[in-house]
Each structure stands twice: as structure tokens, then as C-alpha cells.
Length: 290
Image (cartoon, one colour):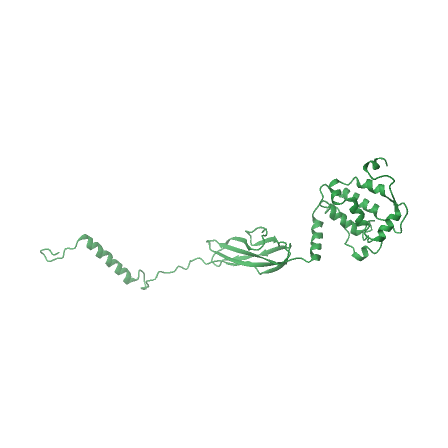
């Protein structure tokens, strides 16, 4: 619209639109910053992700105690936390999963198996990185299983701290003679000490006196060599056995004791040649009369 003076009359709305357009053009021309670069500047302070290592893969035997040492580092800060998790395999219990070093016991199994663990580290600004390792678990051989059981039994149970067992005797030597092997020279066959220990160690209420009493009964059944007539009393063995706690009797009945002591024909023969049989039926009342 033109007025009488020849000037163009611009409305306030159009003036505002033109002002915005001019300002936008000026900012584009100048690049919004010196140098005419239209792209935004990148800051050198952008956080970098941390580095992490769970450690190398391993092959272990079932039920073995495993210790893993993971690590983490951060080039522009510090590691704020560690977190171990199991991602596959038979479940294991991880001790101290929020520390770089952890421990757990390998799972039991009859075939080879694998357990995968993952370590995640978080830096002081919240960035995370993860790494995994694979534990291959192989089953124990029968020999390894026997040694593991023996080691465990030495450290647990009622008798672990009070009974010192002799070494396991050689099987052939153990049955070669009536006397067997008595390496610690305490008057009891070594194989019988081990059997008595294993049968009683985890039984409730068993103590050293209970164990020694059982050993004395075993020695009463053990025959001399050569046989000595009337040196073994059937009634005395029966009456001594009555003092054995009921829970131990269930685990180790008197018939069982006879079977482990008289485990060769030579021992059976020597025993019966030395035996004085009871003239009465063996009952608790018989012991009261002696």
C-alpha cells in the first residue's frame, strides 16, 4: 500500500517476519561462529568407555575351588564398580561378585560341561564395558574322587580334629595276612580304622570316646595269628556293642562289623578257632548277668 508521500506502508506483522529472515541469513553467512564452519564444535571432554578383562578361559575339574581375577581401567576417569554375572551353564555360587577377584566351586557332573561368566565395569561417569570367559569343567576320575572325599572328611565331622588316621594300606598287603597292616602300631588294622572313621564321623553325638569304643569292639573280633583257643568271647563282643549309640548301630550293625573284620577265609578260620561261643541266646539280659 502506498501513502501520499510515495512510501511503502509495511504492516508490523510483515516487519517482524522480515526481521527474523534477515537475522537467520546473517547467522548462516557467518556460520554461527568464527571460521565459517556450519557444523557444531565437538568437545574434547566427551567420556570414553572403560576397558575390561575377565581373564583367560580355563579348564578345571568338577568341585574344584576356582578364583578369577578380572580387571578394569578408564583412560579419562576411574572404575566405579565391578559386577560379575553367570550367563550360561549349571548355576554356581559366586563369592563377592562386586569385586574384581571372585571365587566359586565348579559344579558337579558326570560329563564335560561349560560355565560362562561375564564381568561388567562401570566408570565414574556411568559408561560400561563387559567381557566374558568360559570355564570348561571336566568330571573327576574315580581316583580323584576318592582323594577329594578323603580330604573333605579330614576337615569336617565330629572326629576330624581328634583322630589321626594312618595311610590307606595297599589292598594286596592288607589281606595278605591275618594281622593285616598296622602302620601306626596302635593294635588296629589300618583299613578298619578308616572304615570306622568314615562310618562314624558324621553321625550325631559321636565323639572320641564313641570312636575308641567302636575300635575296641573291632579289635575284639579281630583274631590273633596264630589262633588262640578261647581268646575271643562272643558274649563279650555282644555286650560291648550294646553301649554303642542307636544311630551308630543303624549305620554300623554288629553283623557289619563282623563282615569287615573277617573279610578273608584265613581271618574267619582264625576267628572261629579262637572263639568262645555263648551258651545262651544273645540278648541284653545276658549282659546283665555277666
